[in-house]
Image 1 (tube, rainbow, N blue to C red):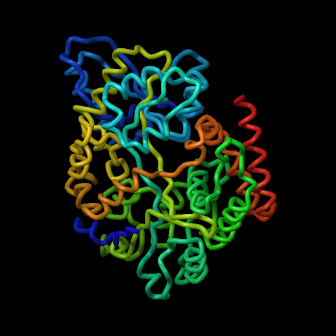
Image 2 (image 1 turned 120 degrees about the horizontal axis):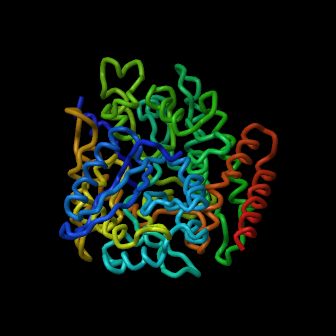
Image 3 (image 1 turned 90 degrees about the horizontal axis):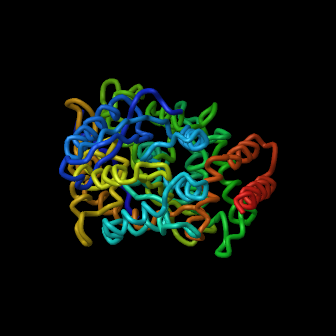
Length: 467
């Protein structure tokens, strides 16, 4: 297992009216095109908007195709797309997470035939096979729901100084994590583990899926039968309940868990690699707030290690939850200009696209030809940070970490996708009822066995509604 001390990073001291972006690409023609299309993206902060606008300006100069850029926050994207579909006002291209892909094909939102044509054109062997496995769809016009761009794997970030002082083992397993959380909780105002705990929350859903997969708690079996009432799932829920006893007070979500870690107020958290630039003091929008960091921006990063793999007592092997970001072409798109944009964003403009928050965007297209890794190599040279406070991705991670990330990206684990139940995953991430049930268990209103039974019933009901 790879684990990287982060001290190496510290060498450097709703559909919105606005726009945002996160694209890059392929060759886009000779500038003899024309027309206008719309791109929706979940990368919607001001700096990401500015970067994406430049990427699209370069595309327009090459192709003659204008692109209207619309930023939509990730939590709002699912409902925004459903509402836009009902109004007959879908974008031409959408940047989205993999959990939405299969369901959107079933709802008539994404054009799987066009996506499959593009993947065939690019060459399926130029893509990460794991990313393609997550977007395969059954009973659709095309084999693939969408076109993969990039992705990240969930990590456990932990405070090595606190672990070493207490003589704790690294939190690679349920047993080690709960022992450390209990031992470290309350020491000098530090909590044990900042965990997602909010009902109706996508971040909580991701962290719970990460924990569940580690214990071989599967959404469905090989026949597609929902299995969330299994002993493995009950065990995963009980672990989550036990771990949450040592969480900071208040709701745990994407903002509060990050804030607690950056403040030096928790010993562990489960987060994506997007935390890395903030830990290195390179993202001013979410600055380091730990008391010691005021005098030393390296203080927290010097004392942090991240672990990509996690294992529960019933898990056969350590696993890593992964999420891929994709470029979907909708069923109402102006197809040829939309395809031209995707070609650009995964070809000539790929590095520009990935330069938007690159620390958490490992390329899912390796290179322009089979066996070519030039896109992965180019990603390592992208700058992380802002202004004069930047490092390259390669400097941020180090070669050992990059090799491990590349290897891990070939085996991201997710519920439902291997069994052809991607549409059910979409429905569950839109519904988020499992997090409400989990919240009831965290509050002590129901037991872990009751929570597992209710989760199974909720998922089975959604599956039946899908037909």
